[in-house]
Image (tube, rainbow, N blue to C red; front, side, top):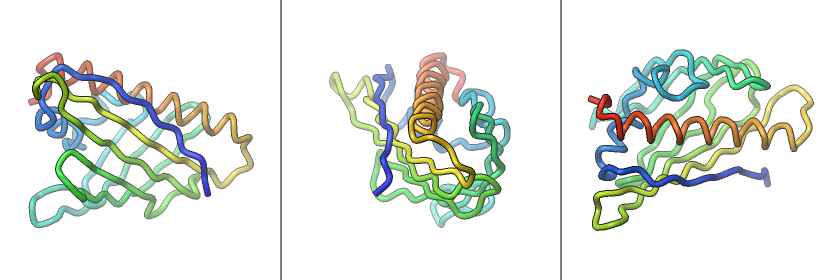
Length: 149
């Protein structure tokens, strides 16, 4: 079983406000850091993305790939790899939980990445940690700045 990396952050906003930013793939390049381009390829009957093409530059990991997204329950989005030039696997999720009477949200980001080229496990984990930390920091800044809409 592949190892995963996870981290959490508390954001001053409701889970719905946070999820609205997470679900807005067209604006990922504005706040994620590593995602340079995002294009929604398919949507479900509720208008949520189910396949997204992402151009990623995370230092040691650079790729143009397609991810499949699922929305298994409110406050949770998961993704997995459909196709990639460099990645063998990328599985991740955002899980949102209300805190402080629902005016704050704890966001947990979990990520597992495996590349096709040989790379030490500790370098992969470091790349995962960089992706997670920058994404959570960017998400927090984006949501709390009020520029999400």
